[in-house]
Figure 1 (cartoon, rainbow, N blue to C red):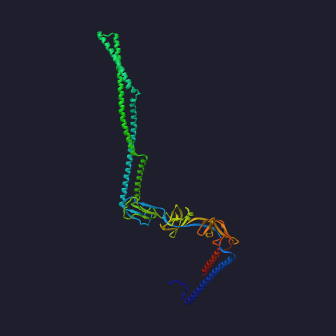
Figure 2: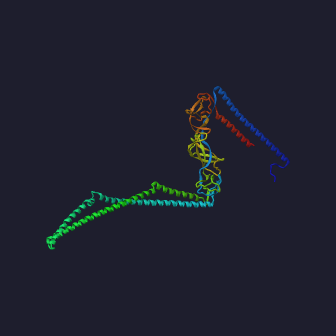
Figure 3: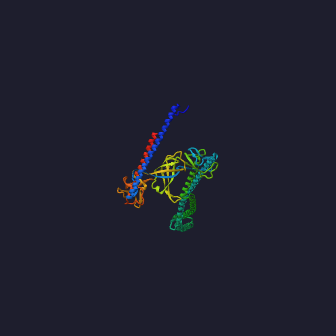
Length: 543
């Protein structure tokens, strides 16, 4: 089927249609020519007007003073921004270390993307199981060693307290026996006097008494023999009395001797017990000192307990670290990128605790950048930013500003800072350049003017204005925030003031000048351009 061209197949009708199409094309060309003529006329008129204005100004300047360009302050919103460039970095970097000497079967490539739950490192199965068993046995040995140390410490502690009890016991016996011995050696004591003075004296007296009574008895018995073995009643009575007294004296002597013997035995026993318990006391003291040295001071005891706890925690953490590798695989805890690889396939890690891989999240990323001294006064934590990474735009917020500056190779100082990316996606690449525009201040309904119109000297900020008599005046102003092109004016001028936009050597306070209003020139140019666009649109519609 042929495509419909809009032309009839009839010869006469076809010629008519072709002629009509040619006429239409000629009209379009005429319209384009007319439009170009009109646009050219507008532009020429604009150039003429501006030229006349400049000529008038130049002529006036020769007659009245120097020509200066003036502008007017405007009301509106002013947004202060700081533009920075940095590199994309992850805020969540996990470092994984070798939990044991173990063979690596496979490892993800540096820079590769790994989804959550997929393996980053796969250990050799047999090597993994051996390492797991070794850690389990090591943990048990360390636990037994710790318990053995605790048991020995407890036994030593018990022996120490037993020795301390023995010291108290033997010290009490020594004190007791020493008191007895001291009593026998004390010349002022009753015991000493009894053994050495009173006892012997009394025995001597009783011996003398017994001798006299013996003589008396012998005399009576001799008289009896002379009397044929018969005593008178008086003699018998006297004999009975004397014999009774003799017997009593003998008993007294025996009791004294017995008491003296008992005292001597008591002294001997006390002396022997004193010597024996002194020896036991010294032994107990020596043992207590020895056990005390084994136990150590309170810090030694605390360190022993802490070391045991530390070994337990360390062994447990190593075992737990290895045990968390599911079936001998290190699985990614989140979506991320492998940013460090320090092992290779087939190698056996030689050092327990050596780093194997670094894994960085792409869901928690930021831009690290440096702030100059000038920008440091503007940028604060919490300010919002617009970030551009590989032509993709993201929202951000300043989350960290270092409190310490660093010196660059050029000698200038800067402060590191971080902007967190609040809406990261799969288009994020770590390490690439990221640009950010930080909104540091926003002022609504303020007076603003072009920055080049503001001057500064030792007294502060000021502008030159042209008054109604075309005389230059110097006026102090108070400024606020600044942007690349404009600056906020808090006080000093109004929108009606004609402010000199560019200060040359011929502009000074009191100078007579001819002002050329830059705003009016800009308005004329914009009006011409607007008219041009309007004519172009109308012409396009007409076609």
